[in-house]
Image (cartoon, rainbow, N blue to C red; front, side):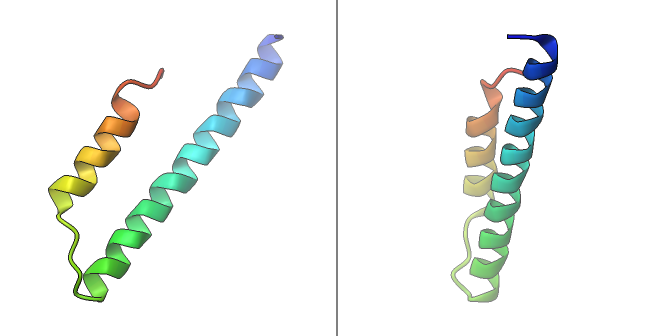
Length: 56
């Protein structure tokens, strides 16, 4: 795979990760507004678990 293709793949992965994070944040805000209240520690642990072992 060429360096240019690797860069495009990396950028695509980063864009998808950002999209997923935004969706999770909005979901949590909606839960708070609805009074469901998601534990913020649970939310951030989920984010850390998802991205702590990913390559940088």
